[in-house]
Image (cartoon, rainbow, N blue to C red; front, side):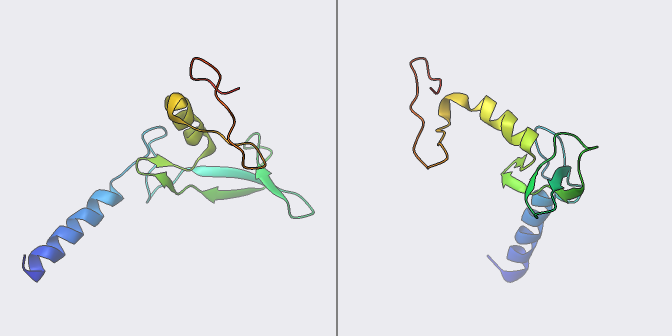
Length: 104
């Protein structure tokens, strides 16, 4: 493959990546959706329960191909993949599954 052909192939690949959108909310890398946060006086940051409660907003980024890291989109992805997801508790131990594929 010649250098100009390789360059064209890379350019086309980059254009395809820019055209990628989140399959749940439809945001794009060049038009990310907002993630609303609350930063308290001690500097602790958490997800806001609503846009009104928020005092900080950050743009989403890609979590996996076709899904952004917005909490709502990740929750939808987990629901979609429920039987294929292994959950962990706060100490890093796997949460055992109950019969029927659901977690305990």
